[in-house]
Every structure is written in structure tokens, then in C-alpha cells.
Image (cartoon, rainbow, N blue to C red; front, top):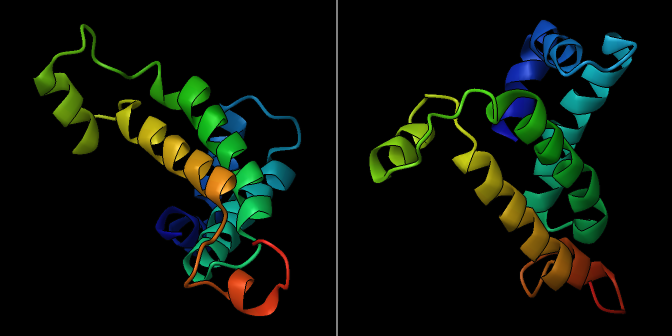
Length: 124
């Protein structure tokens, strides 16, 4: 949600990310990115529409992985370069962990403490 909020406050960041990834109509896809990150993050925090929200968020993580982070990863991958990926070198490690987390949310659903569980009769 935090990256989405940053892009919401400065839409040029989202539009620039879409343009850098090579998407046509970067204004449209930039705003789609911003809304996916911000609203999707908010819905995940609330546990609302969890399985539906994770799909576009996983797509965003895959695009980020292939379009931006993979190119800036320091190889060979050692413990030092792995840790550096988490503290600002732009590596792909954090993106992969976020993708794996979204995959778990998709597979398991929202669980007990969620709005999905509170309002949905079936499995959330």
C-alpha cells in the first residue's frame, strides 16, 4: 500500500514506471498501477476481496521483477548482495518475497480476522 500511496501523491512516478516497463498509453497503465497498489494494499489489510485483489497485484510484481528489478540485481548472488537488495540496491529479492506472500494470500484466502470472513457466508 505504501508504494501506491507514494505514487498517488506523485502520479508521475506511476506513469514513469508504466512508461519504463514499455506499456502503451503510460498514463492509463500508470494510474492502473497506482490504484492496484493502493486499493489492493488497502483491501489486503482489511481482508476484503483477498483472492480477487491478489491477482492484479501478482501481475504488478511480475512486471516489476522483469521490467525493473531483474536488470539491477547484483550478481553473483551472495548473502551480502541478497541483503543489499532489501536496503535499496533495487534487486529482485523483495519483489519475489512480496510475490510469494501474495501467492499465499491467493491460495489460503483471508482467514479468520478479515472482512471477507465477516461478510461472506462461503469460504473467503
